[in-house]
Every structure is written in structure tokens, then in C-alpha cells.
Image (cartoon, rainbow, N blue to C red; front, top):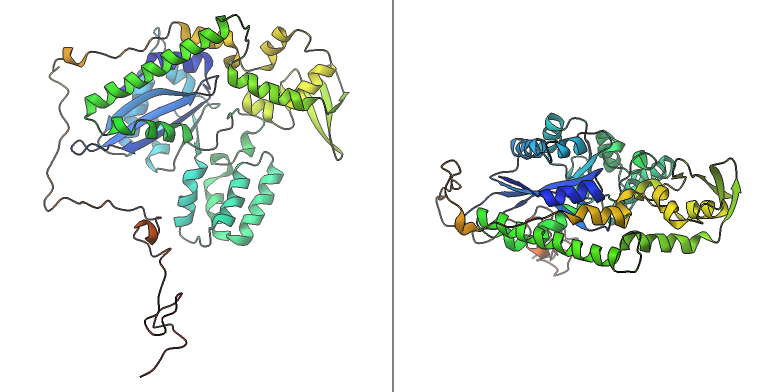
Length: 422
């Protein structure tokens, strides 16, 4: 069962990060109706989360992911399969965890879509992988540094540091492939808008915790109500900002980012190379190449975020291209950041809940199959395999040993060097 929100799709495609989505499943918390919640999210031009679709299934596997992706594939807006057109492209990236059924499902439904692994989810995966030891916080820092490196040189340097403290982690990562998790392959070619993890869908999973404890129909009704309010609040805020007489041309988040970059741009010396190419002196002999025609900078900020970096602003200002700010933002900013587009995408988007009392059985949809298990119901939850003993986990990690012979901590009676023989 999948609900795709038309209002969210219109906002996502009209003024959102249509090149990036995040997908995940979460456990139902209902005492009777067990199963999984599935969600697809992205972000809009004001850096606010968009819930594109939500669904329910009995179990997380390749088949259920395939079913949900096919529901997205079949969705049409004004007679066009807009989600398929947006997601089944080589320049669309979907973030998720490393659940083994996801890649096969994506390949069968959206073969052109690229998949990236969530860096946060990869940390416990690496720690539990065969042949990996000593993947401690120090080693995780090098892993994170490698995953967020903008250049290949910085990436390789971080991987060398990681290899010194945890060679097994490097072996594990090399088998995955850099393009599946690292930023540097996409730094100058693919906008990821700062995303490194599947935080958006994880955030929605947390937001919908109360709903996840409801019966299936109530779940979708409650989440639809939340989405309805979210769209309505965004519309009211956008209308006030754009038509309130203040003359705002950019979304609030984009305007704040621009002001921050602009305030730092006055310290640079700019040298022109051609009509559109400039070199910005960043100190200590370093220079960044800026191309005002291709909207690129060596720092990759412009490409990654879709708005000009401090170096691009310095170059544009030195060339007199910022005299007309209205014209400047039309070519320097991603269209989703422009208030005219953001407001338009929200203007006619309406999300409404239905009256559950008016629903009647269709003879096709049946209740969830529930089988009472033999034995006494479990009262203590199964702890995560990574939880320490102090957290009530099953592992011995974090447990303090006390010697029965000498009374000291850190070892047991069998390994005691001061054992008292009677």
C-alpha cells in the first residue's frame, strides 16, 4: 500500500532538489499490525523536507522495494510519468542504507538511477565486516574525512591515514567502489546539496513515530494530515515572503547562504583570464578557477549547492556582473531558490485528508494477516548487536571484568597474574 502525495511531487519537481532522493524502511510500532513503513523524501528550495511518498508492507526485502518503486514508476501527473522521468536518470542520486535488496530493486525499476550509501549507516557495517578490527572513533574520523573529501588527492590522503589504523576498513571500502559512497567523484559533476547520509528519511521516521503506532489506515491518514499541514505552512510563509512587500527574490535559506558568502568575498584578489574565466587568489599561493559561463569554481561549492560561492561572487563583482541583482540571480542560482518559482510550485498544490467514515470495503483490500505465535510473548526487546553491555546489549563490549581471585578489574581469575593459591 503506497500513498504518493501530488502536492509534494509538484513542489519537489517545481522548486526542490529533484536530482536527490532518500529512501528507507522503518518498523511499525503497532502491537498487532506488525510490518514496515516505507518512505521517499527530498528537500525544497528553502531546505525543508518534502515527504514524496509513504507506504506500508509486511517485510523489508527486494520484492517490497520493487513494488514501491513500481508504484512510483506508474504515478502520473497531467498524464506524464513525472517521477519515472525524474528518477530514472544517470544524474539522479538516491541515498539509502546498504540493505542488500535495494540495489536489485533499483536496477530493475529505475536502471539509470545512481545509488549512494549513507555514510552513517556504513560505520556499523564496516565495524561488523569480516576482517575489520580496531574501527574505533579515531579510524571513523579518517573514514568520514575520506567520504567528504572534495578532491581525489584529499580522498587518497585520508584513505592512507585510515589504512594505517584500520587496514581492514580500506579493503572493505575498496570492494564497494568510491562512487558508491565518496563525494569526490561527484564534486564537480553532480549536485548533492551537502547530503552525505539518508538523514532526511531518518528524520521523517522519527517525526512519524506516533503514527507508526497506529493501525494501517490510521497511519496513512495521520501522515497525510501532517503532509497537508506542512504544505499549507510552506505556502503561507512563501506568500508572505514574496508578496508581503519586502521584495524578497530568494528563499530565506538561499538568501542567508548568499549573504554569508558575499561577506567573505571582499577579501579576494581577482585576475581575469578570458571573457568568462577568472582566477581568484585565496592566499598562500593558492588560486581558484572560476568560470562564470559554466557556473563552476574549483572549490566545487557552486556545483554542489546550486548557488554562487565567495570566489564566484568576487569574480562576478570584479567583472561588473552584479549591477543588476535580478539578472544576476537568474543565471547564478539554481531555479529552485528563486521565490517566483518556489511560490509558483506551492500556489496550486493542495493536499487534503479524506473522511474515513465515508470509506466502504472494496472487496479487494483485506486486513493484515496476523498469526498468534506459540509461547509467552517477549517482554524485553532484542538489543542491537552493536549495543554495549551498559546499554543492555548482548555484546560483552563495555562490560567491566572483576577478578574473583585478587579483586582487581580488567581481567578475570583465569588470566590473573597475582592469583592466590590455597
